Amino acid sequence: MRIIGGEKGGIIIQAPSNLPVRPTTDRSKESLFNILQNRFDMEALSVLDLFSGTGNISYEFASRGSRKITSVDENANCVKFITATSQKLKLDKISVVKQDVFKFLQQCTEKFDIIFGDAPYALSRMGEIPQIVFEKDLLHPSGILILEHASSLTFNHLSQFKEVRVYGQSCFSFFYL
Image 1 (cartoon, helix red, strand yellow):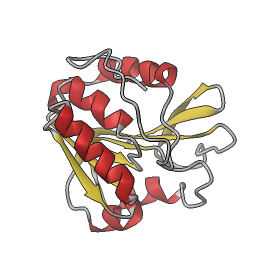
Image 2 (image 1 turned 90 degrees about the vertical axis):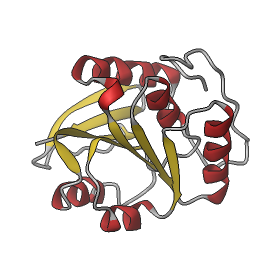
Image 3 (image 1 turned 60 degrees about the vertical axis):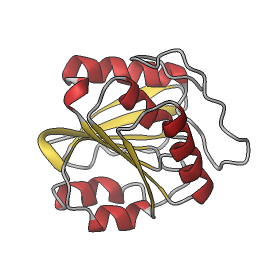
């Protein structure tokens, strides 16, 4: 995996093979960040990265100057890897939380500009994430929730769902008020 843009753009990051992850592909990530850069001032963003895994998405936001990135994952090896990589690359805007994502969301009182979630595709509770985010009012008024998921899953029945972008077997669903 590599960082696509920003000050650290072009840096290749090699994650250990023992991490239980499926990083967002470079092609999908590049498309996603093209969408986001046209909508947001990247340097003003407060970002929540759920199911962070390798930290792929967090590094991209940090490289592009986002002011605060919170990465949440319950896997100790993922948390260690994100912490070590952030320190090595001097991406000091990233803070890493080792916790179950659903517990984190239930306890969270902070608001974010972007909440990104890339849960394991087999996770049956994926549909709970938009419900929790909007019930707990975790987004700023112009904020957006983005879920990466298998193309077989749809969210168009949820009122906050606005659009989906499909990239092969993966999709990004966008939610906002």
